[in-house]
Image 1 (cartoon, helix red, strand yellow):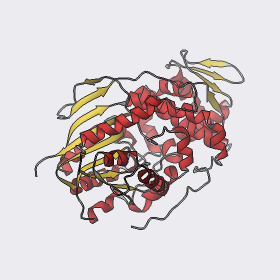
Image 2 (cartoon, rainbow, N blue to C red; image 1 turned 90 degrees about the vertical axis):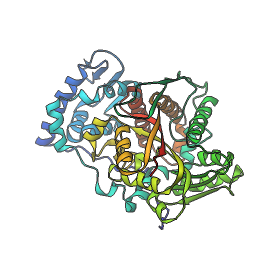
Image 3 (spheres, rainbow, N blue to C red; image 1 turned 180 degrees about the vertical axis):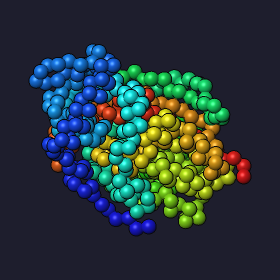
Image 4 (cartoon, rainbow, N blue to C red; image 1 turned 180 degrees about the horizontal axis):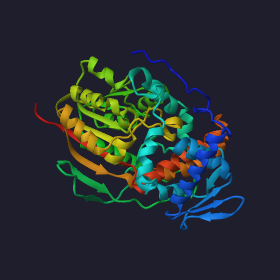
Length: 447
């Protein structure tokens, strides 16, 4: 396939904020939103202060200030959770500890809105736009929207490994009961201690070590050694490919990000492994046309961009190119199965502003699809959501500390606010358990 270099639709990679228009519909929806929000907050361990009246809501806890309540309720009433996030972008509300505040409602997300109203809400919830669906025609633009913003931007807040995925800190690992009928060994990485480097513009060395630990475990799980033929779906900036080549493997790594490909090739060459690693612009669906097979297939937090309509295609592709005796290691951000079923096709703040077309699977649906449509079998799961919360906390801390450098790259204050909300919102999701991340290992069942 031919993939041309493209840039986001705007310099900041964001759609314009839509203004609030006055009228009866806005007034009614804002009144409903105000009533629902106040009822929800009354049950939460947070403090919400409405200005200029000084009215205080909630049971006490992380503070949210409503600077412009009328705008906040209008946006919430018109656009739901998208409007909630957009009201933060415009400054209608703020929080001193944004992640701390968002963690509280995230832990109760499934029950904040009364169940009868949840069913009604499903009728008006916006659907994912057709141009964001992760077809072969759309996928490169979806990836470019985020990953082709600027390599220099990502360098400002990532550690030196340039790993843009959950780290695995040095903590104990516990065995936990697996779900009904599961044959996977279910392991849980215990919560890491939060550690801050003295200079918020830098990461302590343990983050780079934790990112390396994450990758090395995946390589171990996939059985990567001298002579292993490795396929990586989603190159990132090349760290996994470098480490696999260092073990003596030959690596074919594919990506849809031109910016990532260029820097990955530079880093791979600088590490001395250009002869062992091929980086290619390719959609994963094209892999079956190459005639190549691999002993190990690895993919780090790429399945989130596949889209639920194409999960089966994704795993069937892996199954088709995996050599006999091969192993698969995937790191995947997941959500509970019931929430996944309830939110399929939903357009969210994240899909609008950060990851077009993104959607999180459940571990259960991954197990179902691979059992029903492939010869792959899930044999090991390491759950590490608390480690992602700590990873994101460190990224957000460094991102905010690098504000002058971000602005010097040509990004604006609204971009800073969007990305702070994105990183804090994600941290809250993992800290609350609303979303999770796991390393999943698959072997092939004899055909």
